[in-house]
Length: 324
Image (tube, rainbow, N blue to C red; front, side, top):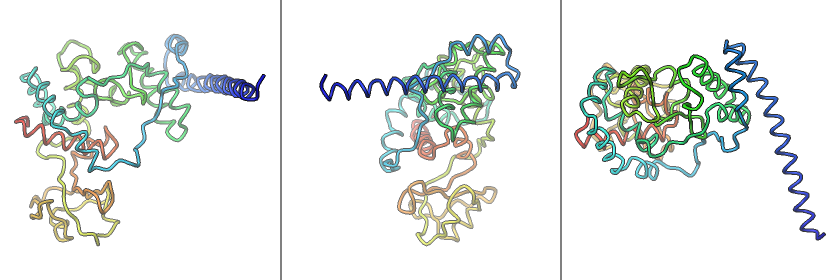
């Protein structure tokens, strides 16, 4: 037997041993999750049935922000005219129903459409992995975020236990996000909405349920229909770094006094009823934005400033197509 063949066989055996060890460790971790499920009041029947099908999902991978991204390249690539036109087409298919749902939840349709478009291209990008295996695997693999994935695992299990969904219906992407809106299991539980009054909430296939759920989620995070999301601005480079970020809010007039202006150089709005924050996702040399409360509502669902800004910019392009 040649040296390379010996090395290959040795490496294969080592890899096999590692896989077996990780699978065994995962089974131990499942015992921990099973105890959590019991403590959470999940029925013994559901635990027995569902845990029998949970496997280590090798493709489960928590999303991370790529260091090579910049808003100058990310926004043109994501908040596209094509995506805006697709949103217009989706809206036209059920215009009366969507308009009624937007009025019910007091959310502008363009923001719902922009979120939907960014999440899944209006259903063109929807994964179909079993959420219990995905979230259990993520919790096992990513200890820093384990509590988040454990929460979503237990939430999904409770939805099954309460007969709200079957395990076969709760399909997610490789990060555990559900349906065409890429919702966490907790957000789906808390703000899933029945848009066509058929007694079910289907965010995988039913466009009215998808629209109603998105609108209800924004409403649940205190969406204000009298406002937009924010605006791109220019700030002086000598501005104190402690003033940049969502931890600091002040009035338009105060930002104006600090030298912040609209992107075109004009004065900021004169509204006195709002407190807003300044963000610079790419640093002082990148794009700068004053963001409003609605931006923060979006961020509670999307988390990543890049994605939220793409939703915001896409909403502006949808608005230009006469969809408010």
